[in-house]
Image 1 (cartoon, rainbow, N blue to C red):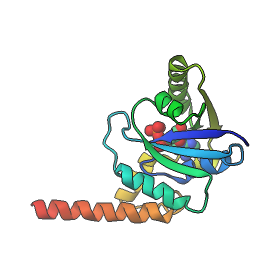
Image 2 (image 1 turned 135 degrees about the vertical axis):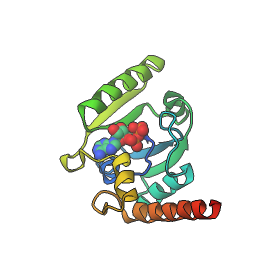
Image 3 (image 1 turned 60 degrees about the vertical axis):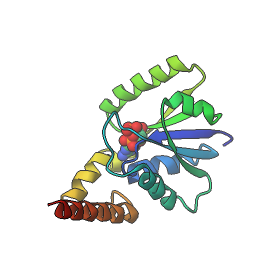
Length: 170
Ligand code: ADP
C-alpha cells in the first residue's frame, strides 16, 4: 500500500472499463496518478486535453488518492520526473497483450528501473473501448452502462457545438 502507480492512456473518453481498473488499483496502491497523453498514435482526439482531464477529475473528485494530470513525450521520462517506478496498464484481448508486451519491453529497454504491471479487465468490460463509446454516442445509441453521465453530457455538448460550427460555416 506504500507505492504510487502511474496509469497512462489517452482516455478519450474515460469509460467504466478504465474506472474499474483505477478502483481496483486503489486496493493495491497508495495513490494512482492518471496520466492523460496528448496524442493517440498521431490521431486527433475527440475531446481536448482540458476536457479529458476535467472529466476524470470530476469523476474522482471525492477520491483524494487519485491524481489526474496531462503528460507529453516519452512515458519513461514522465514517470521518472514523478519519481515513480511502476506503470499500470489494462488488458482486454490478445491484441492488447501483443501491443502492451511490445510497449513494456521498449520502456524496459529505455529504463531498466521501470516495471509495468497489468490488470485484467472484468469480463463485463472486456469489449469496452473509448472508440466504441464514440461510435455509439455519435450514432445516437445508449451508453449509460458504459460511461458516467458526465461523459454523455460532454459528448452531446461537443456534438451540438460541431453541428453549429458546420451550419454557421455553410
Ligand atoms: P491508450 O491509447 O494508451 O491505449 P486508452 O485510454 O485506450 O489509452 O487505454 C488506457 C489503458 O486502459 C490501456 O492499458 C488499455 O488497455 C486499458 N483499457 C482500456 N479499456 C479497458 C477496459 N474496458 N478494461 C480494462 N482495461 C482497459
